[in-house]
Structure formats: structure tokens, C-alpha cells
Length: 217
Image (cartoon, rainbow, N blue to C red):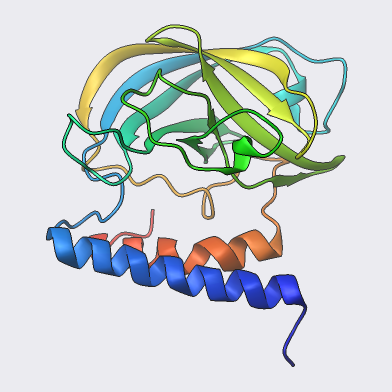
């Protein structure tokens, strides 16, 4: 069975992304084809609580979390050139890790879905680029720089306004990220599910990255 148009498209684009990941890794000679030189930091998330509930406890409920943060350049271009920046968060909920990955984009209704190079992690908003499935519908997440070490945490419907739900404070550096692999497909926060088409789009590239690093998590 051929499947729906979005199924076919997500599988096709997923295959292209996997091929690009392998080619980038082979061309650069790096074990990690994407985000090759990430810096790990301790971090603290302070959640404000939100009356407009999404049904996701981590977004709706006030609280405080100690998190692991990776700040990285996705392609690994020379520092003198702009690159796609990434911020990854690892949050422990219910005894298990949940990974959230953000990439530099815009924040508008269209630009929130467009990867945008920048010269620093604090240079532009960063979004999850693709929506999560929540109990109340699709949500997109964002980290928006307020300073070099402070980011506002937001959620929005795919075409909706951004709602502030917390803040991320970066703490002490922990060195490089050689021993840690962030994976939003394997490590999902409770209440935030991946749509099937998102899995089909992302999984080939993540499988290629796991295969090159010989790691599952």
C-alpha cells in the first residue's frame, strides 16, 4: 500500500536526510556527523505554571528541574562562519530521561519552521522545528535568548502565539559531549508524543547517526 501523501513525503525526506547525514560524516571524517563539537553545561529550568493547560505536566505545572544542556553547532563550520546552532535539554521525569532538541530558526508563523544560521546560540530563537503531539493537540516548543546564559521557554500551536512557561539558566561547563547522545525519538517527555510522520521523517537520520557512533542512547 502506497500510504497517504504525507506518509510518502515523510519517508522520502527522511531517506534524503539520512543520506545527507552519512555523506556529511564521511566527508568530514567525523564520528558524529551532526553537532560534532557540543559543549555540555549544567542548567536549571524554572517552570512558571500556565493557566492555558496543554495537558503536558512539564509545560503546565510550576516546578524546578536540574537539567543537562548541550550547546552546539549543527554542521561544525569554522567559528568565523554562521552555523545552525542547537540547544539540547535532558530532563529527568518519572525516573527516565526526556530529551528536547532546539535549532536556530525564526519565531514567526512561517520562520519557526525554517532553519536559520547564526553566529551564537544567543543570536536567534531556537525551536523544536517539528510539532509534538500533546493531549490537547499539536505543540511546538522554543527557547528564546534573554542573555548569553538565560533563555525563555515557550510553547505554541503550530500557527499560534507563543506562551511563556519557564526559563532556562545555564550553569557551569562540563566539557564536551563525547559521552552523551541526545535523542528525542528514544527519550520523550511524558505527555509529549511524536507523530508517526515525524518519526518517519527523523528516524533514518537518527539511525545513521547512532550507527556511526555505535550508540543507542
